[in-house]
Length: 73
Image (cartoon, rainbow, N blue to C red; front, side, top):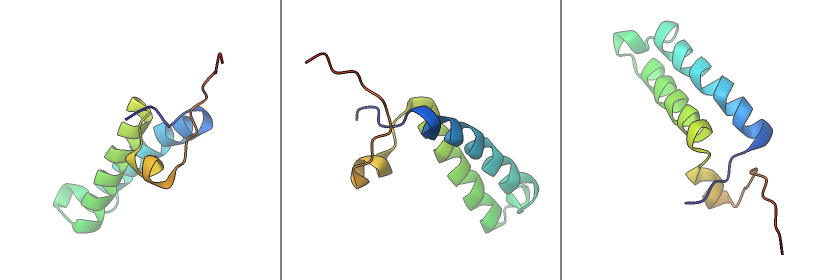
C-alpha cells in the first residue's frame, strides 16, 4: 500500500492514538481486562500505527488521501 496519511491528519492521529491507549488502560478498565478498555486500547494502537507508517487501510477503501505529493509531470 502507498502512503495516504499526511499533514494535519498525521498529527491528529499521533496525539489521539496514544491518548486513546492511555484512556483505555487507565480509565475504561483495559488493565483489568474489561472489553471497553481493551477495545479503546486496540483502537488507539491502530490509530498510532497509521500515524507512524503513514498508511491507513480504511483511507484506501474510502478513497481518502491526505498525504501531499509533488508531481514533476
